[in-house]
Length: 415
Image 1 (cartoon, rainbow, N blue to C red):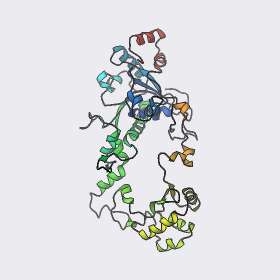
Image 2: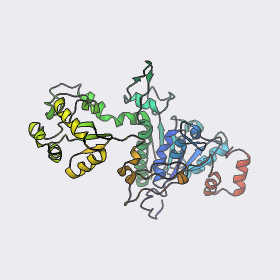
Image 3: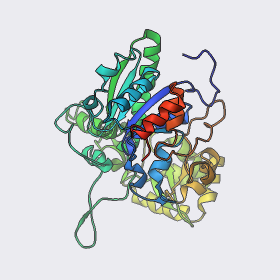
Image 4: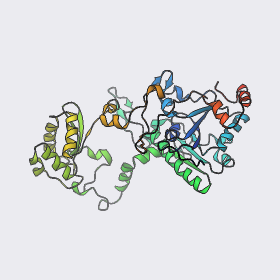
């Protein structure tokens, strides 16, 4: 362990990660590399087909690869050869973490599972990140990212005009949150390993992560299985039970989306104090006098008369004017953006400046972690297949002659 203090915006400098991944789950190590970890992606000489997967394709390479593997180094090894397996073992001997971001047990089949590698490096943290996890009846099923969200109950199918069932437009949860949870678990395990000298094995499922991110709705349904006199709604709704999460917002009036003169805004004056501020700010104190509401969490449900008043009020100003009003009057009003328009929002532009095309191949968002006032530094471009093979092997102490021999024998690539 290095005794030098890493730069503030590269707090994981010195952490060494060996990544064996296919497609998106490699994002777990991206969180680490963005914060300064040295991540070596091990792939076959033919490469991970993530470079050709999904859209858009930017100058021949997928955005999925450009984002997922930015800031990493690639070494191409044929793990079907004994010499290739030994190179992998050499990598592990000096590593803090091995990430198996593919079906559970893939490395064990090669003799590179946790039980094998812990013999080489007793402090090793071994993390398996997969679709459905390493246990359970679905563990060996093939799957892709949306499966974890449908499994978790996050997606409701829709019908098109022809009566065909369709996947609705929505963000992917499991394939993004799963790697994030894995990264959190890895760092916790690294701390433990450094304190105790003992390595550990952990595993994370992207499906589990999708369900966990919707804990509020899932747990609410379970809570409602208890007697109605034990689990109720809140006091402002006269303790009426509501559908969980945003489904319970449909009838809301003081917490609702309204159309402005040039778009939409979200109004959120569910606290009485915020509601009073709004009414006074727009010069309509009689609205508060007539419908003061409860102190907290009162959405004025089903009050269509008030809703009509608010609809007319919000139509009188632009979105920008309503945001300025929110700030001045101290009442919560938020923009309603789309993935296309959100980057034009001044708050977005201030907090999330894109990495440039010349740096990472496509405009990409930074990891939104400010360390002593700064975002992490701009990462390097995602590597081509085996781009740093010679560099990584030299780091292991192999001579130029030995590297040439391995390359000539097809043990390392690319091909």
